[in-house]
Image (cartoon, rainbow, N blue to C red):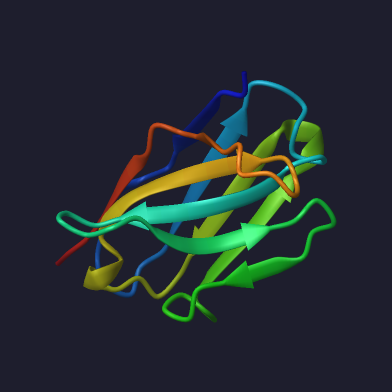
Length: 117
């Protein structure tokens, strides 16, 4: 069973930056489709960004140009660089991993990001 652990959340002022990390229990990042999601209080979980096994990235419109998803297969770690943060980016951020062409998704426990002055 895949185990994912996020880190790097915290409190940041509007306009600031944070980098989230997601580490897997095994060497899966070269074989799995990876993603970051977020869930604000009282709202549904939303897709933020994905990265395929080949490194192709996709972003939600609301983070396009501000966030960057990346991975280091050798370190079994995925990242989400978040720049120009806004108060509306406040949420719990979750990383995910699934084999291609399946819906068998593993989730991390989430890390809180709060953007506030």
